[in-house]
Image (cartoon, rainbow, N blue to C red):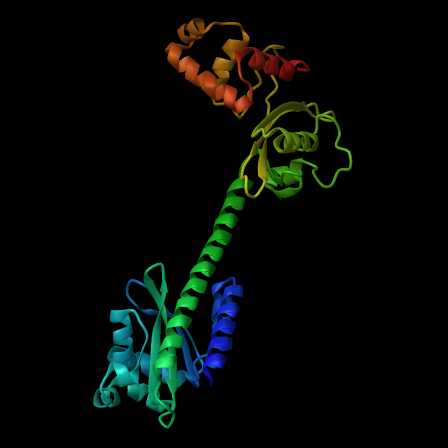
Length: 353
């Protein structure tokens, strides 16, 4: 193979690995292309446990008998593998040991059973850990691996390490997303993730069961869909990051607080949480919003009754500074900036009770 052809095959392999998403895809892409980069009939891809170096999985083009013999007496007596583990770089059998040492070692005997005579190995490094090896074997009558093969092995192992790291991150992201979805499905509040154009990206189980957000041409007044649309319009146009509305379902009479938060600037996403209110009998009784803690609801209720900070502190048996800190959190959670707006929100939310 000419130097130009070798370079082309290296680029082709790198492209195939870059296109792979999962570890399975990476392994398949590697085995499908590496034979054109390093000419060898025997190909192997080992996945190792990084701490102990034990074999987790192996993919190979050689027979199972060869692999069994290699694990039985070849691996413990393999000067090529020993060099790779110690030096963390590619090596072949003509450089790792003298001809006499190579001929007498267990690895050579295991290869001989399969009709092979020359070996080349390289480490697969991911974040500083050796997660595997790539292995090549040639027949005894074929030429030993040369400097070009070693250079190719180094480049291939680097590309394979990068592809493996990316695949691990991709799979971990999938696991985390699945775990997060399961966690959100257990929340009693409806949670809806949208883009800034109000297109739904995700709904938890409560939202799927309780809300109707499916392509409604004209959302009805006091609906969650309308609130989300208004919130996203403000996020896009005014640069706001939090939006809060109190709504009452016309059919059921149930009242809720709808709160939207802008999330990622880069992804242009937002999350909306619907907090149901437990109805109270008194017309000016603060609804028991799940968005507020019990103590924060108590402070908000006292504010709605017109008490000063000093009076609230005395009645709640806390310091005035603690009252102020609670109020800051209440303001942030209800998207108001002062007591007057909080009282207005409370009274608006309780008008129809």
